[in-house]
Image (cartoon, rainbow, N blue to C red; front, top):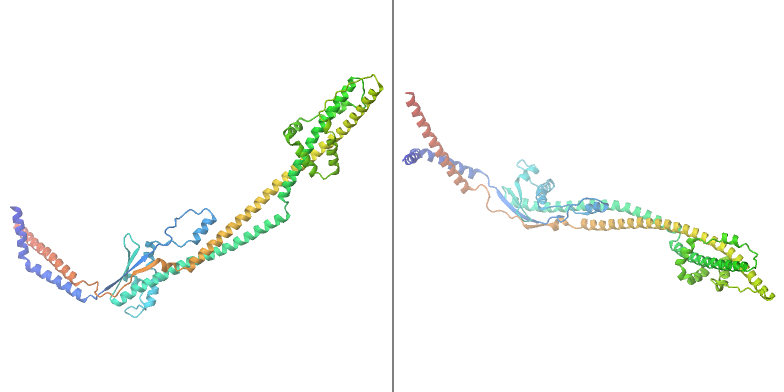
Length: 460
């Protein structure tokens, strides 16, 4: 019941103040009409650009080498769709449009960049590579011209920017390429000087191989000689035991020709190739004294490891003469073999020393050669890499990447209907706003009267 009374009271308040509400609504409507017909019309020209991000596929990476620096220099600047949007209203683009169209303000002066920027709205259409540009101006023809001119100047600006970046890359790479060329020439000179003055590694290897073969042959001969010496000593001892004296000091010779265990062990490993290495040694040895040693040892091959068995008989002078001749022959051969053994040992020692020196020389030369060649190859590879990047940068500079990456998908046309003021919208807003204000005033007026009456009653 109270709710019905309250609603009735509200309706009575509105009916009671309907003239006031109508007057306020009428004033608001008249004000909106005046505003709609006195505000100069504004036209909107719209254009759409389809942009292709530049360098978006390039992943930023940590720079750890000169090649990483080179790759970074030679790349296009990365331009995303958002970057295109921000660059569209750059001062260079706006200034070029003002100069191109000769835009003037009311006082006849060229409009400022800020004034033109306030007329333009740029936004990216969600989830697309489209950029929508809106230009507002009181002149519909001029609004369309401004929008289309902004497109042209923006494309020129992006093209010039990418070209400047490419030319900077070309200049930087060219300067570094000159340094790489100097480094390559220096390494080439070092390589040439080394090859002219260094020992031939192949010749060193051949000489080492020849000395190894010669050493093998000499050691083989030394074994044969020592075996013959042992055989002759055994024969002379047997004769002494049977009463035939010797003219040589057997004990002294035995002390002198003690065999070395390391020589025996080494020669035991090459026993299977003894015959072939002897032939190689004979072919490689150019000294007359060395040939004599080999020939003398070859004449004794028939008696190596021969078992000497002497049947002694004192029954006749002929047997004594034969034994004496045989003893003399053995003594002579023993003395010759002892001397030959000393010569062979000396030759072996000399060859081993020579081999050691050659191996050290070869190791040094191989290290120097590898170092020179490695430095040259690195310098050559670096020079070629800079040369390739320079060609790529020159091609990038020659290409109009800005024009290729931006397409005007929808050029601006002259708008026929102004975008503002919207008279119908303004009238609707005026009516609604007037009604709201009128109702509020009516309720406030009624509240004020009731409050005054209650205050009077209480005071009385």
